[in-house]
Image (cartoon, rainbow, N blue to C red; front, side, top):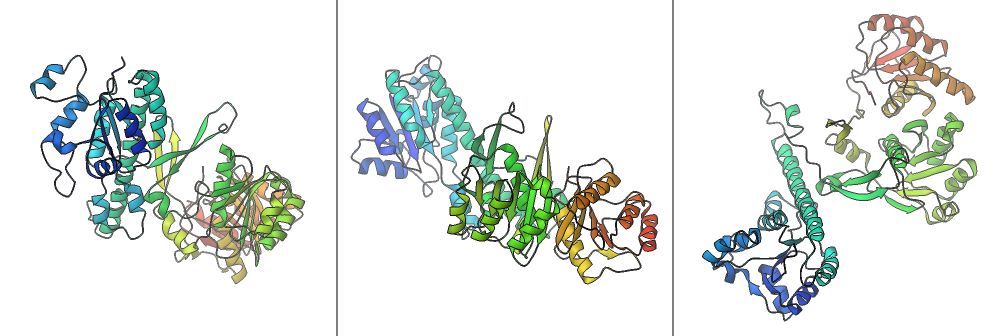
Length: 542
């Protein structure tokens, strides 16, 4: 059914293309109803427009809060052709066939650091979403437009169907309209939830502890499609990247999702997963850091006086696995390092806060190499932000949501539980290894020495097997485990893992503790003169 468009309501905050659209409608003898700033824009352009107040017989009131919320408007939009004509005639209401509405810029306003709660509240659009939802509900008869980018397509479809729109077009615009209002509502929900949680922090009661307020009853993350991916983990799987928007995006520390791609092929699903893990490896360190990632696990990671030195140490940890890896840095990448990387290994993605112009010139020689610029960040801001972030994992018919795992930068709760305490260098290496083991898939073991990983065991069903694999990687790289440290993402259930570590020359271990056989593990460490720290916190990464 193609309902001819004879009457249209235009009320848009974003005036892009609106005058041109209105001119086209008027040329086709369509009556235009409008209000507020839209009415002013159209009449200033010399167009003849009916003001909403003439239709409702009420003036705009409460500083514009109430304009279109009236039966003369909403009955006109919701009227079913062939069903409700008698009702319309009884109350002298004319049907409305086209609704063109976009909303107050809530996201833009609330991402301004100077925005206060009162300003945010005033930018919650009420009438606009109501108009959009009414028109979308009645899409069998009414066309709804919420994006200026759709105006040209609308005119083409309208012209093609002799002053009407096809049912397929109205359906598509209705879906887009509900998508638009759903995102808008989720932005408001997220802002208010975050704002009120901060405001009430510390005011918990015994009946409502802080933990119960981490999530509301409905999880509404404001996500917008950023790009369609070529495929998912495998070529037969479809995939899309959705990006957080609004205040979530604005308050985030640098991320792969919101980084700038300076060159190279589009990022694949697997590239994005690996790149995210790589950035997570380096962004919590104050010292120059490098991480090389393969299949979401570190091949090597290191700290040094410069990122050039950090890269060399990370690469030497596992040169074989580094081939085709993803490399992240927490400092600007320069010409010398760009030269060194390209001459030494094949790399899929490079990630850094910034690049020198000469470095970018060198990297252009590898046109398929993806180069991502995250922008600078503050480690203290990163730690502050991570405490409010969440992590989602889809399972069949459900979504698991949890707060993000992170390592405490000031480990005041750590306990040395062996007779020997770690040396200063061992403690530095233990802290470094504890940061890296968080990224490694469980069961996770990390050997480290002098600010670099020298062997990593990931994703095994047995912690002892992970220890063996990590040791084998060290030997294959021609490195020595003597006087190295070991980090385990979870406790050792038996003392066999500590025995293995002792056999390899490990001098210090960091682990959560909490096993029924902790004392056996401690006794084994003491017998081998190994210093051991219990953190009281595990870092499973499934």
